[in-house]
Picture 1 (cartoon, rainbow, N blue to C red):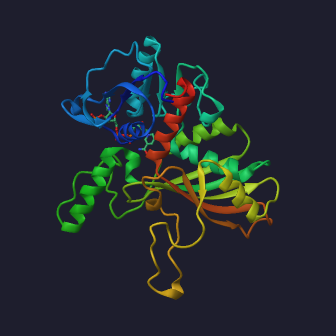
Picture 2 (picture 1 turned 45 degrees about the horizontal axis):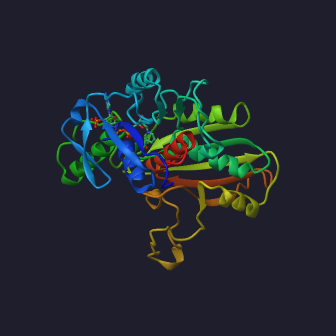
Picture 3 (picture 1 turned 90 degrees about the vertical axis):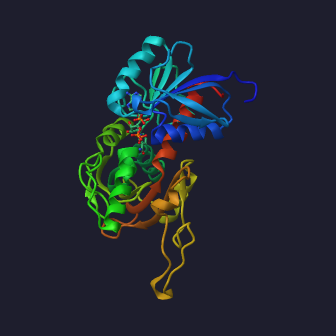
Length: 338
Ligand SMILES: NC(=O)c1ccc[n+]([C@@H]2O[C@H](COP(=O)([O-])OP(=O)(O)OC[C@H]3O[C@@H](n4cnc5c(N)ncnc54)[C@H](OP(=O)(O)O)[C@@H]3O)[C@@H](O)[C@H]2O)c1
């Protein structure tokens, strides 16, 4: 890796949650970076971000893209299409993390960076939800197939971007202080100490449909819980061929994105207050915060369906980490080791 050509990288949305995570992951990586340009909206003019031990200026005027090796697109989807057009015009490779083009069949949706990313000018990085569900369902199926997967995604305030996290924080403080509630944030209503039905799964559903085609029925509902980070899911998976629990656990443990967490205290090391109540169980959403990969636990056979054909499981992840790790892996597959 040390003999590679230093890259010139542009990140649109550098001040956002995913842009920031990408900068941090790039900084920790062995990538040789000649130049990193971070772009954000005019609201961020005059601010800086840190990379390689230096404070770099956030740019609000769009930079010249000609000559760049790669653009990472981490704005909201509404701003993304214009950037995509500029990248295509400048003939610069672009990895879109926003989902703006993930429904376009002409744009490769890269679930497996290891399988190679080809030379397409524009690549779409699946949402963390789709990446996690795809990995779990493929692992559970083994050589067979999933007939149906039914479950619920629990998302945090961070799913609404940095503004969602700020809103939850301000609402929580106002409730504790018994002061006037602030105006609702991007969820459109108060979220603190509440659970909202969520409608934000169109992107993940579409991406999973692209990945699996007309095969399994994948029926996902969603709720928004008042946590600051993380995403979790509870899912019932039905298989076409019976498997035993041990085989299922081995399949999950063998998948590179997944880590099976044994029943027992969560990884935060909590202990039971009362012995007979048993230990608190993981993996929790906080267990996954700041960690790579997807933690899978609570794997059990579903007794109401034919033996060996249906299993319940629970998984948690840090969506920002999952997306940033995957985008960097796609970039390496597209450009070669940097
Ligand atoms: N949150 C997640 O878990 C997650 C995971 C994977 C993918 N994604 C996707 O990644 C994208 C960003 O999500 P996020 O959570 O990071 O959102 P965020 O925290 O709200 O960040 C949005 C970013 O876009 C920038 N931006 C807004 N308008 C712009 C413009 N005209 N030109 C350039 N930059 C502009 C913002 O800059 P300012 O700071 O100046 O406003 C900020 O840097 C979304 O499309 C989301 O769907 C999110």
